[in-house]
Length: 361
Ligand SMILES: C[S@@+](CC[C@H](N)C(=O)[O-])C[C@H]1O[C@@H](n2cnc3c(N)ncnc32)[C@H](O)[C@@H]1O
Image (cartoon, rainbow, N blue to C red; front, top):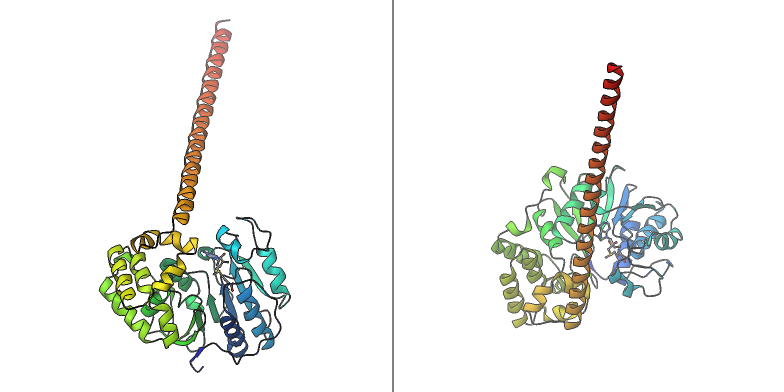
C-alpha cells in the first residue's frame, strides 16, 4: 500500500446515517476508503466506537468491498457526563448503556456487525487474522500496550494495518511514544488531517511476550525528548504541527512536572502550542486530568476548579459511607458467628445434662 497523507477529499462516500461523533469528515472518508480498499477478507476490529460514527464508515467500506459481516466493534457502552455535550439531543443518563443507540445507527449500514460490550482489559480475541485494527479507546500508556498485547499476535506482517485515532492529539502523546518503540516492526502509512488518525503497516510479528511496556515514570526524559524529535521528523508538516505541543503532556504523564512546565514554556516562547493549551483548558475532562499542569501554566479555570473540588468532596463522602457499610457488615457477621456459637454451646450443655440425668436414673 502506497503511503498517503492528508484529507482524502477525493474519496466519495455513500449516504450514511448522520451519527454524532468525535472524528472529522476527513477521518470518516479515510476509514471508509481504508476498509473498502485494503480489507482482504480477514477481520476488521474497532475498539472505542462511541455512538458509531467511525463504525458506520468502517462497515460501509467493507460492505461496498463485498465483505460485510467482518467488522467486530468493541466498547464498554457506558454513558459519561462529559460526553453529553457532544450529543445533547440523546436522552441518556450518566452510567446508562448507549449500546441500543449505537446498534440502531450501525444496523442500517450492516446488520452483520459483531457488537461486543467489553472493557479493553477483558477482551480476548480468537477470531483469526486481523486486516485492520482501529483503536479509539486506548489513549494512556498502559492502555495502548494492553490493546497491543490483546491483538498484536493476530496482525499479519506485510498485510495488517494498525490505526490509531488521536495519534496526533497532543494530550495523548503516549500513543506516539509506544509506536516509536515498535519502529523496527512497523512503518507509518497514513496521517489524516484535519483530525488525528495515523496508520502503521505491521512488518514484523508483534508477539504478546515482546509487548511488555516499561513503566512510563522509569523512562529517561532525555531519551524521551530524542524520541519526540524522531516522531515529529517522520510526520508531514500539518500533522507535525498538531502533535508537537504534546511533549509537555508526555513529561507530565511521566511524573516530570518541572520538565513538563519547562517544555511547554520553551515551546510557547517559540509560538508553539499555547493556543492548543488555552483551547484544551475549555474541556473539563482534559482540565481534570492535567490540572496541575494547567495551574503551573497559569491557565486556571476557577469554574472547573470548583466543579472538580465539589466532585472530589462527593467522592470522598461516598468512600466514607462505603467504608462505614463495610464495617457494619463485618460487625453483623461477627455477631451472627458469636450467637451461633453461643447457641451450639447451650445446646451441648443441655444435652450433657439430659444424658447425666438419664444415666443417674
Ligand atoms: C473517543 S470515543 C470514540 C469515538 C468514536 N470512534 C467516534 O467515531 O465518534 C472513545 C470510546 O471508547 C470507549 N472506551 C474508553 N475506554 C474504554 C475501555 N477501557 N474499554 C472499552 N471502551 C472504552 C468509550 O466508551 C468511548 O465510547
